Length: 101
Image (cartoon, rainbow, N blue to C red):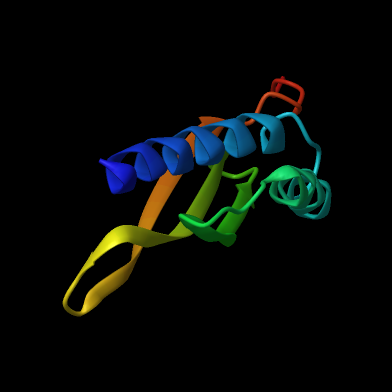
């Protein structure tokens, strides 16, 4: 149950980060926005870490892709599965670019 809840939280974080990054005007400002979101994440005895594996601001395709990884410490560990990592990728359309003429 703990892993499923953590995986859902990771999915929500990546979606939020992609939405925020999509409102920015460049790769650099998108990365800064995602970094601010990561700074607000609180780790716990179950959620050990959350990292941004990929932040891709692609004006050519008009999309932002954000991939997060979350390391989860299982409250009742199974042999060889004390820590699990879940990954979530979200893609959002860039909304900060003016429409082409």
